[in-house]
Amino acid sequence: MPIGEPEWWYAKDVRLMTRLLGPAARIFAAIATRRIESAVPYRSRLPVICVGNFTAGGTGKTPLTLHIARLLIAAGERPAILTRGYGGRRAGPCWIEDVSELAEDVGDEPLLLARAAPTMIARDRRAGAIAVETASTGPRSGATVIVMDDGLQNPSLAKDFTIAIVDGVRGFGNGQVIPAGPLRAPLDVQLELADAILVNIPPNARPESRETTTGGSVTNLADAGPARLIAGLRRDFPGPVLTASAEAAIPREEIAGRSYVAFAGIANPARFFALVERLGGSVVAHRTFKDHHTFGETDAEELLDLADRHGAELITTEKDHIRLVGYGGARERLANRARPLPIRLAFPERDGARLADLVMAAITTARSGA
Image 1 (cartoon, rainbow, N blue to C red):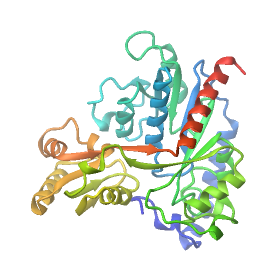
Image 2 (cartoon, one colour; image 1 turned 60 degrees about the vertical axis):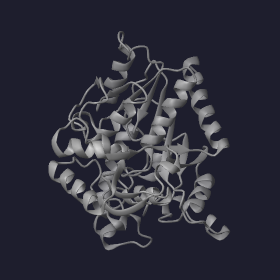
Image 3 (cartoon, rainbow, N blue to C red; image 1 turned 30 degrees about the vertical axis):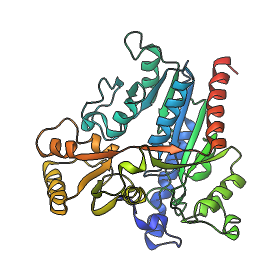
Image 4 (cartoon, rainbow, N blue to C red; image 1 turned 45 degrees about the vertical axis):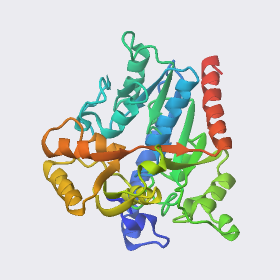
């Protein structure tokens, strides 16, 4: 279970806490719905491609944003990524000028995104879009398309294409809105905001029988498994439902046969540890931290000592590694010793081509003014 997310969010049966928090969840749901439905969004002069998710916690949104930015670059576009900068201190609008900036200033995910394309931080997405449009000098000027990171529920900016990513195992949890469940707004409201859905299937997800792939509302598929979730979405959601899996972006032989102390401060650390094992690495010890954890000197010293005691190498996620960069002392030593494991989304050939077609068609339509 991801750190910071209650296990009962993803339970099959209704728990006491779900009932107790129901009134608060209904208030949150009403506020979120009113905010979404009453907004008058700003229409950028650039096409806007939005990546989002329906729930709190990790689903693979950052790898999807990176994938879309790269496919746009391959198509001759000049994407600019627009992100809130979660976890950072800067409100923006401001460009990430250097990928060696401190994560505590700009956020860890924006630093990863900035490695792929110019990245603008703006908690006010309308102001951020205008800043992208009006950038007239320097390497960050001349953007042809905006890729809006984590913007599904943000109504301030009109989108030309929106894709929402779903965890293939956890799905929508208990179907309840925060704090009674993981949904950021009522699911029926959020489904109306998406043009396509991507189901992120862990490579080790258990197979589903034919019987479990039918029946049941898509709003009540807690721990249903990927096949049933996909079948429910394809039945109830009118747009394309695509699939992908997260995999290492380096050859297996670079990890296999080595012993590791693995550490992660992401929404689902267990998935990362399992990936290391799947690649043939032996995780002799692991440490988990809350999502977007800011590592201190004590954390770094303990991890270095743990690796020394086990005679093992250190391995972590790119997001965690980037939060160690720019400091001295034990954190610098940990950054130098720990191997970041890059992740990418791997698509079935048909779904990868479909996603590219959907994105490029939306851009063409936006430019035609249709």
